[in-house]
Amino acid sequence: MTTQPVTLVPKLGLTSVVAFGLSYMAPSLVMIIFGIIAAASAGTAPTAFIVSTIAIFLTALSYAKMARLFPTSGSAYSYARKLLNSPIGFLVGWSVLLDYLFLPMLAWLTQGIYLNAQYPQIPIWVWMLINAVLTTVINIAGVVLSDRVNKVFTTGALLLVLLFAGYCVAYLTHTHPVSYTAPLWNHDTTLIGISGAAAIAAYSFLGFDAVTTLSEETHNARKTIPRAVLLVVGIGGVLFSGVAYLMQLVHPGGVFDDPQIAGYSLSIQVGGQAFADWTNLAGIIAGFAAGLAVQLGSSRMLFIMGRDGVFPKRIFGKLNARTRTPIYCILATLLMCIVGLNLSLETASAFINFGAFSAFTVVNICVIAYFVRNRKTRPVGVIGYVIIPGLGACVTAYMLTQLSPVALMIGGCWLVAGVGYLTWITRGFRRPTPEPGLDEQLPTEPEPESEPINA
Image (cartoon, rainbow, N blue to C red; front, side, top):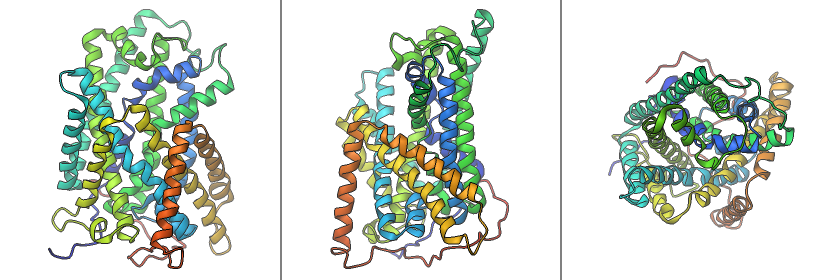
């Protein structure tokens, strides 16, 4: 076999990257978790989503800064390695892997559950394998095909969510809500309730950071990726908050027979059983797009760490000469599907949150570290590089503490395993932590930018 290139090829533009970010978050998620958020917030779900949007946006600003300064596909792993040190960068990357390795499995498991509910004669594990194989084939074929398929499915999911919102508006024109302000604040609202619900709602934004893993496959990444990060969080926040507001008008308060199926019950209420089945299709469509996007991001993270020599370079640091995709990394994520065949949704979810919020916190710290390194040689603002990321770090660290004991235990064990692996590859820290194979220098000022090209 011929020697493979070690660089990814830029083929994506702003629209493509934003579509990947939105599919990663799954637009229909607001319909699925609405009942849980409304119950936790005493009937003020849109306020909880607004608060979580603001909180996550603080971290999105940090990701945007880092993506502009370091347009590489390693995301939090690369930022920490360059601005803190290589061992810390390795451990951040190891923690993020808990998110990136298990998130495709979670997407396929969720998809399997939805499809099994629609077609119960086919077991969940069969649906999981079907979806995993399909997304794997598409991602191996190349990022251009992945982009085209993702745009179609993400657009379909968005249209079905907007159709549901339209049915809510039509329903409200005939029933006339008791209060238009109660969904935002009512006599049962408390700050503790809102903050707790906002912490849960923040999980809806997991994946916005994944667009930074596409930096080396994006035209004019220094400009396009930061814009995409902020647009994904902004669009997601407006969509989640707006749809939650309409749903809260249809069903005031936070009392449900079963909060977990509140969205499905509201679909029946506003449009009937047939319409509810169509909105359920939105979850299935969004689930496939999410599986495609998360596998793409996960494989890129594995490739970057393989290219750096953290994992065997001959396997994980290699690209296919024709498709320019990390085939072995994609297949590695496919193997994770087997791990999830016998897991519950709750257990699978516990694997991903620790890595995500750990990475969010570290990226905020990286922005502050950049300020410390460059405050004497390059004017950088205290507000943008210290105060805002400091607030972002506090928020994401708080969310980390709100995870379930199971999630914290899994995350802690995974981190200990990472320390053990780092000890082994450095031979008891007698050797340096593997560094990137590319000649990268810490920039003091971004390079000139040109306009992005959409794929």
